[in-house]
Image (cartoon, rainbow, N blue to C red; front, side, top):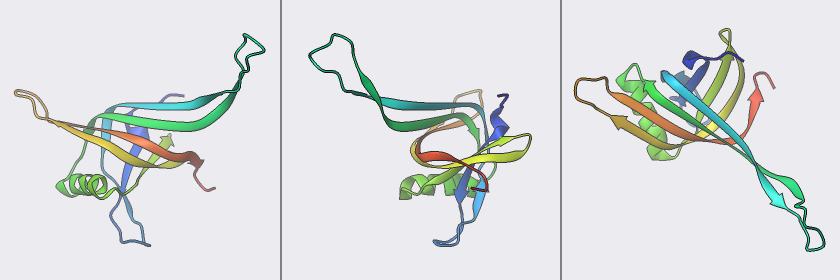
Length: 135
């Protein structure tokens, strides 16, 4: 799967409760998606071999050097974090959204280096599973 930073959209609800209006807040230079399934150990003393079952699914997303084009977009992202509001992440292929997921913002980091560009990075925890668009 080929993907670049513009294929992962970060969308914040700028509408009212009950009437969501999702707006993209920017794109990023680097994105990391991690998905994991916990392990449940069901071994017994009778055997040396470990026996396992799949446990809880989890996912995280890290976005480095997030470009936030406007003050309004930045404030919407910051307010979503401060208010504990979920944001929406959409994955695209060839400009068409193929799946979405709600996510909780874990951290927003801002860096303001001397002689360099300001950088905003965020880390997110995925809520539930990715859902195909249209389902």
